[in-house]
Image 1 (cartoon, rainbow, N blue to C red):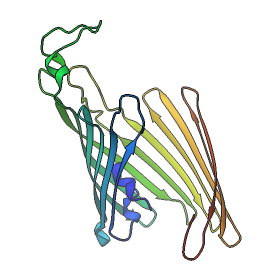
Image 2 (image 1 turned 180 degrees about the horizontal axis):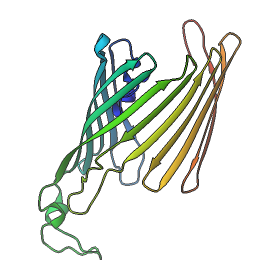
Image 3 (image 1 turned 90 degrees about the vertical axis):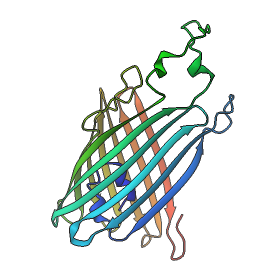
Length: 239
C-alpha cells in the first residue's frame, strides 16, 4: 500500500485504509566540482473517505540552488467500483522556473561570447506552468494476483520557455503475485521510443524471519541493472 501512488495515476490509492502523511528532504550528488547544491523534496497526504473512495495531495520539488527548479503539485482520487476493480485519476501542475542571474540579462552566443543583450529565451518570462492528468485502473484477479495499468501525462504539456519541451506520455503495465512467503512483480514502462522492463522477487524463510530479494531491469538504450539483497524481520525491528 504505497502512499506515493498519488504522484502517478492514483489507481491504487483506494487500498490505503488510514490517513497517511509523508515528508522527505534530501541532497543529491554531493561533492560536485562546481559546488552545485541540488535538492529534492516530497510531501504527501492521503485521506480515506470510506465508501466514497480515497483522496490525496502531493508536492514534489527538484531544485538547483540559485539557477533552476521544478515543482509538481498533484491531486489524486481513487475509488473501488466492485471489490476487485478500482480506478484512479490524478490532476497535476508542472512548474519549471529559472532564477534571475547575469546570464538572463546578458545573452551568450554559440561560441561563448557575451552579446550584451537580454537572452530571448526569457523574453516572455523565466517560468512556465502547465496542467496535466493521469488515469489508471487496478484489478485484483484473486487474493494473490494483481494487475494494473496507467497512462500518465495524457495531454503531454509543453513547458518549454522558447523551445518545445513536452512532458512525454508514459504507459505503465504492472503485475504482482503475493503469497505468505513469496512476492513477485513485473513492470513494463513505455515512454517516447523506449521500453523498460523491471522485475522483482522476494522470498521469506524461517517463519518470515529472513528474506532474499532481487530485482532485474532491462530495456532500451542498453539498459541493464541487477540488484540483490537480504532482509531480517524481528518483532521489534526490521532490516
